Image 1 (cartoon, rainbow over the protein chains, first blue to last red):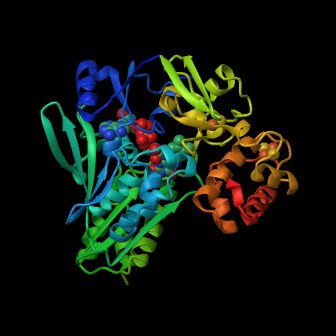
Image 2: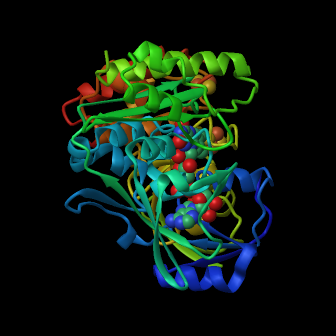
Image 3: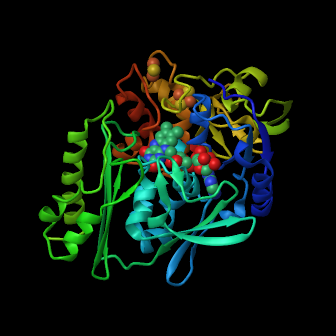
Amino acid sequence: MIPASFDYQRAGSAEEAIALLTEHGDEAKLLAGGHSLLPLMKLRLASPSVLIDVGRLDDLRYIRDAGDHIAIGALTRHRELETSALLAEAAPLLSHAAGHVGDPQVRHRGTIGGSLAHADPASDLPAVVLAMGGTIVVQGPSGQREIAIADFYIGFLESALAPDELMTEIRIPKLNAEGWSFQKFNRRAQDWAIVGVAAVRANGSTGVALVNMGSTPLLATGVVDAVKSGATAEQAAERATENTEAQSDINASVAYREHLARVLVRRALEESGLA
Amino acid sequence: MEITMTVNGIEQTADVEPRTLLAYFLRETVGLTGTNIGCDTSSCGACTIHVDGESAKSCTLLAVQADGCSVTTIEGLANGDTMHPMQRAFQENHGLQCGYCTPGMVMAAVSLLDENPNPTEQEVRLGLEGNLCRCTGYHNIVKSVLACAAEPFGATK
Ligand SMILES: Cc1cc2nc3c(=O)[nH]c(=O)nc-3n(C[C@H](O)[C@H](O)[C@H](O)COP(=O)(O)OP(=O)(O)OC[C@H]3O[C@@H](n4cnc5c(N)ncnc54)[C@H](O)[C@@H]3O)c2cc1C
Ligand code: FES
Ligand code: FES
């Protein structure tokens, strides 16, 4: 399967990528690792007429200690997240989850920016960044802006990124987590999650987010409220499906997904240390 | 678009359509047909090659993305008539039957040992999760990789 024809432009800098996006408008798509976009293009589910390759922007490939948060360049690959000593120390939930994305070949090429920008509810990293309360930094023709991850996802494969904006950095607060957990339920090793849960407990509060339980990556707000008002893991997990709209597909019915969400939230809360 | 990449140590320059996938470039333009295409949907790993030393699925990369890179295919592993230790380990441990998955399996396994020279059996199984084999039941593949890792200089010898 070969994608439809397109024009290929390689950006030498973030500014050049934004200028190219501005020039080509809706016709253009950014290409990072290509591990979400190219499969769609091969199936002709996406046919951009211009691809702007940002995969060589090595100055957007970093994991840095920035005081109260960890700053991660958008072009940082899953493999780099998985093996980062800094992340293992300061955000172990993220490095652990990155090590469970796809398979080693996918992790060698796919990027955190691509994973977050693609806004696929089945992706692992959006839920992790939601649970941790991260911030997305984007750059456009009129400068830089920051978007709280809770405001980033607006629809299926749709985020708050404007068509002429490039995601440049992801900020993960240093939480000093007392406990965390990543539950990914799938049937075969390399598969996407049928349902997944990311949870982190820190400074007296709990973040919980769900993979594949609606049209966007979702915060489990009912669970978080329940924990706040003193619920046990089991009681809180009963609220796992509030505000979700799970879909049925070849892997699971809606009822099965909802059951999994409750079971996995309970396990995640228990593993994070909630009684 | 004109691209230049080093394939198994030899510089290759060609004019390609941007939509050319790296797997097709290697097979049809460079003429190296050892890289197999199984699923063509990034699931099976038969097309695994190395880009700058790391395993990648060449059905899910554009040739233009590898412009300027160093690419290694299964044909680039042996040293003349001397097989790479991983190839020998597969031969000696019956790590293949029909052989269709084998080039990708071997390339994935070499990359795995580069990153983790002394893996446990579980780590080998996880490290090869992106490669499917319809024949062997994986048992002898895992055995081959562990045998290679146990050699004095491992995969990089
Ligand atoms: C076989 C296979 C298995 C996989 N399994 C999993 C899995 O289990 N869990 C999981 O979470 N993911 C999985 N993935 C997806 C993988 O994580 C992708 O790497 C990731 O979703 C996209 O990253 P990318 O760099 O490849 O993005 P690309 O495919 O290059 O881009 C994806 C989208 O994001 C946009 N984009 C990319 N970078 C930026 C940026 N800096 N700013 C703005 N927009 C940008 C692109 O324009 C495009 O629309 C799998 C992929 C494959 C092929
Ligand atoms: S042909 Fe590339 S993964 Fe199957
Ligand atoms: S040996 Fe036949 S597919 Fe693996």
